[in-house]
Image 1 (cartoon, rainbow, N blue to C red):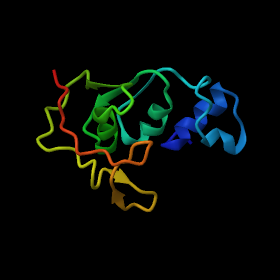
Image 2 (image 1 turned 180 degrees about the horizontal axis):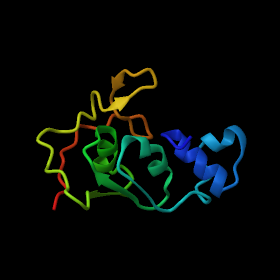
Image 3 (image 1 turned 180 degrees about the vertical axis):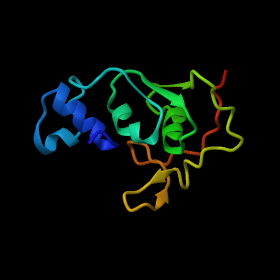
Image 4 (image 1 turned 90 degrees about the vertical axis):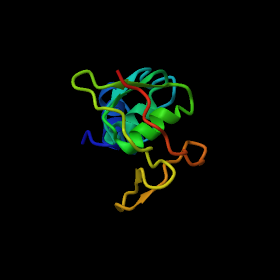
Length: 127
């Protein structure tokens, strides 16, 4: 299951050798990947596990772009898509209200690791 948290689980099991329920948790920082790249909200867990650079391809996915543009820990890098990049989004990402999808399908604000709400973000990285 390499979908959402399953990407973390797959990396932990197949690469790091972590088995059982622990594979769904973030591995110790000294064992996690230094670099990760993604272009969808389903990549957020895997990207957040990276201890170095988190390369985000901008496909205007709300939660992903909220986290990338907020860059709370200085490790997120936003890059336009390589082929036919999207134009700048003409609205702010709704980070403070509805960009996060809860497990039950409802929407809410995107939270930083410390629990604070990420403010709405503008789309600024374009060719």
